[in-house]
Image (tube, rainbow, N blue to C red; front, side):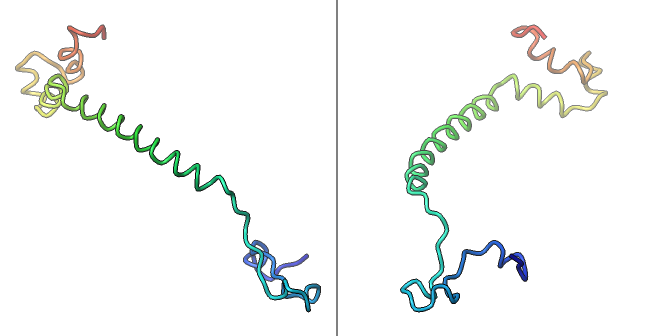
Length: 104
């Protein structure tokens, strides 16, 4: 079968052809497949997705409110000369801040 353009190829079949002339289907278009479970699945999964999203957001907020993380951000904002006065190199910031609680 040849198609004039791609929209003809992928559109739903039209029942207006001579084969269906005089039948009650003449002139109607076939609808695409409907899945009965799709709506139910969406109603179940949407609240579940919101629940896990809320958990993730809470964990990020807890991590960002850590005083150690704020200390790392403050040290990273300093210039190399200011860090040198403190005796810290830029690549040592995380080890200095978290060194006493994690083996890094």
